[in-house]
Amino acid sequence: MALTAAASAATRAAAAPLAIARVDAIPVALPLKKPVVMAGERIERSQSLLVRIEAANGLVGWGEASAAPLMTGDTLPGMAAAVADHLAPLVRGQDALDRAKLAARCAGALLHNTGAKCALDMAINDLVGRHLGVSLCDLFGGALRDEVQPMFLLGNSRVEDDVAEASGKLKEGWTFFKLKIGIKAPAQEAEAALAVRRHLGEEIALCADANMGMKFAEARQFAERAREADLLFMEQPLLAEDFEGMAALARESPIPQCGDESIASIASIIALQRLGAIQGANIKTIKLGGIGVTARAMSVCAGLGLNINLACKVAESSLGASAIVQLGCVAPNLNWGLSITNHYLAEDLAVTPLRIERGRVARPRGPGLGVEVSEEQVRRFRVG
Image 1 (cartoon, rainbow, N blue to C red):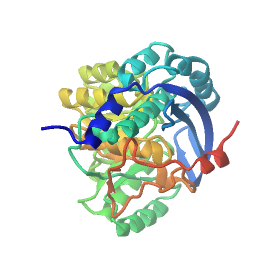
Image 2 (spheres, rainbow, N blue to C red; image 1 turned 180 degrees about the horizontal axis):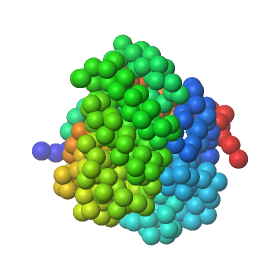
Image 3 (tube, rainbow, N blue to C red; image 1 turned 45 degrees about the vertical axis):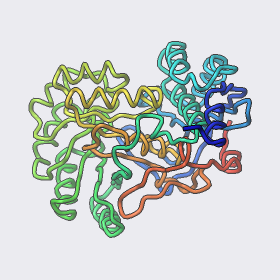
Image 4 (tube, rainbow, N blue to C red; image 1 turned 180 degrees about the vertical axis):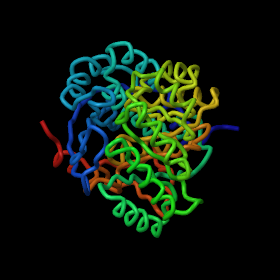
């Protein structure tokens, strides 16, 4: 059967090179609705690097990655310099359709700097999706699900405020919550976890994240005292490099252990699993360095029998959130949930921000990331 004229034109367009003409690294700072407090860090404004890629044909792709000095070591000025001085020259003038080759080239060009690599890789994939007229989800194998269940972060200083906030979110339809721990005494935090569980009931998913804020004895005490809170997992209680301590804790803890800051590569996922240190992994694009490697990491986790928690850093805009939602829709399993963070922002960068309705978020169906960026908002919140 002969191709229609439109299909033939689309085929020719897809076959033609998609030359990258311009790469811009744009640091931005966005205000949060309220500060987020976690072990070792208080966040009042989100700091992210945007990468804007423009092709010779005029199409534009966008990527985003949060600065995360306590997780990846990436600071906003460093990320901008890494893209402008080291990564952009490697992709400028190249065919964006060779996205896997470009990602491999950038991965080997700098040690670490995973946030900068992530923002650039996301922008290239957004550009390619827009060029081909397909979503990020379809670029990486197609959807296994059409909506995902995000979690809401509870990080108030008083348990009464956590309970009140959770109550309001329950009425809005949220069914998944995360407690921030590693800040107060472990016995106090365990009592708070039990109080929140009593309020939420047995059917609501609840987990806890320490952000490396505990010593071994504290983590063990919290896990034992919070046993009846039926937490889905306890995330990264110990320092990132303490693989042996994590393994020892996993052997004693009644709560399954999730790695986060300790996961900086697919190799670290494999090493932690072999030690028995984790039962699941928090996977972030900013830690692994891009969209493609994150998709591979999810498959590795599934093959190793690990649970998957897929997450943004606090607080990425609808660009980063859309990437995580679409990856969540292609994930082999997502049984430890998903965390997007644009709803913690007072201002977003998208013309139409990604919305959570009745505790669910549907995957964007447009090409690429599926969200349109307001360049006026980008100019407004640009820093440096």
